[in-house]
Length: 290
Length: 294
Image (cartoon, rainbow over all chains, first blue to last red; front, side):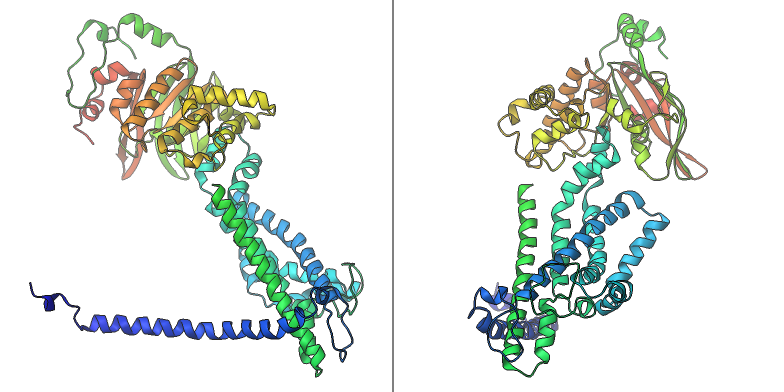
């Protein structure tokens, strides 16, 4: 056997393969460019103000536009409160809805309708949700953090329903049968077998929905107003949020305000990062235990 | 039905390669078998999946503290009939039955009967081991906890007793808190048996419990069945004729028939195991146990 016979040959197939690999490499680089640039500018510009006055940046009141210095406290409190409110509304409702869809509704008319509506709702632009809540809530009860919670909850609900139902679908039917064969009722089976087997997926799905909602701006524009002092009451008076502050500060012509906008942006990114990390951790812990 | 013939005549010879040796049953032994009280009395049972009639006209009596085996080719309705005995078929959308399944003279499908209560008394072990993704202890304690037992001491006692009955205690006593999913397939199946008998059912239904196991694990489960027989009535579906011959007291042979292009399952012959394997009445039974028919 001659070595030259075993060397790779320059066939069309091989050239094609190399060309495709190069194309994929270029695509990866192109995708990475905006990501890296966004992270870079947020970390450099936001970090400059966030870590200069740390942690008072996260707790102080927002100063007047032209005044230099830290302060995003109201926005941090607002974002946490509004998102918490939204989570408390959307997650229980969404998980219960998903349990109904997967365990009780099946292919019934109501279940099919709800499933279809949830799918459609995931595609509704967030600003439409904001307008909707403005009309049904804010016009009557005025600006408050709770209006923002309602709007975010409307956004989160379909996501929570869909991911939770997917997680429940993944629980093998053999586990349900094992439980029924021991004389467990349906409710008992769901509580003690189905939910524990799927809880990690449901929790991480919900946390990702929360992280998404925390960064939403449009639904909060009409619903929470723009406070400059910390407002710990979710149900009355104007509130504010990090996303809302980024939006308004970026429009101002003053360097001090723009800097604070960058700081808010970095805070928001870190918040989403932490939530995503926790979601990953919950999933990892739960799978490890098994 | 049992006739005098089997006692007076030598067993009809069958192909020695497939039919396992079956001890001759004396008249007194037959009397003992037939004297056991009837647990299930199945009368003219038809099972439908939506419009499709999957099983037709099953009549049989399952007797207390005996092992009854269902054998037959794939798709002949063995599992379907088994799942009617504790109403597991209720969970399949569109499944319904005609005829009666009497459990100690009570119609299991009567309007006032709760499927949950039925399944507390008639447990089931499935083809694929299906332990919960919980600890070994929690798997066995699951049933007793459903029944409202919360005392730690009582639960410990039940768990140990059940695992001992399932011949699993010595292997797992030091890792009761470990996940059940870390066990081997044979251990998982014995855990499922322990979990089933922890609720002290009267009947244990087994749906091909050994089909996913190796021969050694299979032998252990068969030993286990013989031991558990004194406490429970056992009905087992098996693809393995030797298993039926080795372990069971009664055997039901099912087969699939064609009727106007529709396949349906049918009970061909039901009798004492030694009779089915040595002196079957129906030609189809004989063909099946001698391997002439697949």
